[in-house]
Length: 162
Image (cartoon, rainbow, N blue to C red; front, side):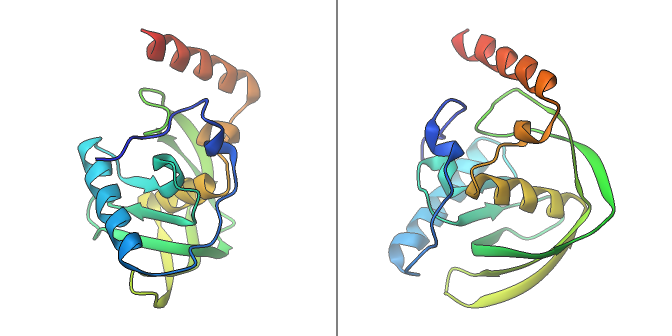
């Protein structure tokens, strides 16, 4: 199990670097990330959330297979947007509605270093965008009204200090 980096850790605000090598070390990290994500009842996890500033995230969305995205790039997002409640393993017990495009098209590499294109919609598109934000140093609370964000950060601080 890996430790999850939480709100206040500066790494969450940093832009992650490209994964240079597709080797056993990456495969091991991915396995540990899936174990950590499942143990914490998450459906997405970026490497930065476990302290690794590399462009890698995983998803395991209901009614979809577990997925690995290495060095992902967005090709296009839909004009149509939707609001949906989001949460984050790095900001436990804080949820709020976030508006995002309802579809995303991207290019990424799998664990074997093979590129693949992907079109996603609905919950998978949302999780992909949430995790893409992480590797770009953006949190879901950065996408909401500043006053609401301030209130949610205080709520989180109250929860985390017990």
